[in-house]
Length: 179
Length: 271
Image 1 (cartoon, rainbow over the protein chains, first blue to last red):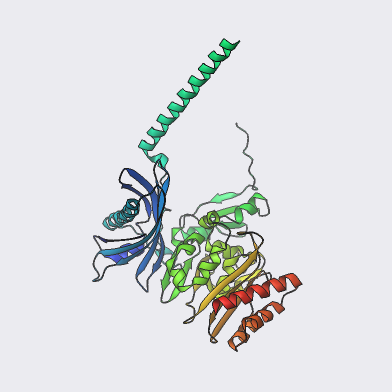
Image 2: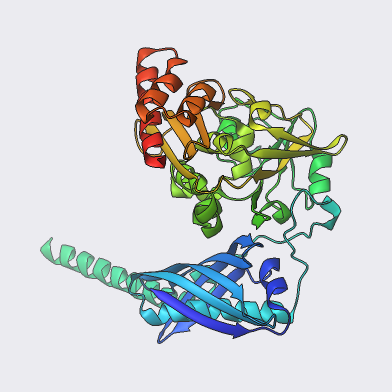
């Protein structure tokens, strides 16, 4: 499905887009569900002034995911507006809201990155290496990082252990009665 | 506990530079750069490679980019194959690369494998070196001592798993010129199973009778062009005739027949 959205940045749009500092983890909420994933800069078309990205997220504590290819381009007029066009695929229990939420998450990361500019230029290697800015690889967020997910998992594990123990005791009692 | 850990690879020193200059400084006679590790790590585990030092390039984000500037595609050596596959810029301007990379092993391998690693490893059955050869790509390499130089495919690929890269040199960028106007491209290969090393293959770029590029996979120790077949195509030869010319240089009936058929299919698809 196609999702479109525009976002207003604090600074010049193209500089923020091409720098790619907005790549990284995304965590969004769609209805009652939460999705965690990441967005990554894929390519920069300086001739057409379009930036390509790939975003994906999976549902926390459930089955489903959302992934898509995004095109981000500065709006007309040279201001801070960025137009986002996304082609998103849903899987499992993911709803259309999740696609909107994922693109919204990317927009949020763009705004955050524009507010706190970082020197993540991706220069051509043909340029002097000293000009090249370093960057950290994108951090990956696991559902296990979510305290709510861990609490639910612990609850289920406790129920499973209690059930197993009860069955064991019952089995032993039944065995004694038979003998 | 307390015993020395037993590892598959022979012992080596591990270096993780945080800048390109630092990485170049760490490279040398008995050092190997580690990018995606999809070829080097198995070689280490089998102890077919026993470098004294492994220089892990994965912290060098500056070498990971896909950028179109002035009509030319610039690929950072550390760009993942998956990024190449997902790139809309590459798909629109250099569809041969998108087609070729889809044949590289499986998605999990393409998520880690890098474009530069595939090129520098110079496996004669690898898809990307063949596609880049057909596209007249230029390879930018850098050394701390000797600076930069640029190589053509014919200069870079010297033998199976051997390139013209010196031990202290690093492939930093691949520059792919824009194909001629109206060019169409196709990639065809045959492997025993999907994702396996290909037995033979062909990459074709064609723009009417103005331009033809045919690069062959598995036909020689390195990716090779078929200049006679290219000329024949430009002079109006049919796909079957040009394919026969391209295959004629090969030894072995099976390989010749297979390559001829794959070249014919690729030419027809690109016409």
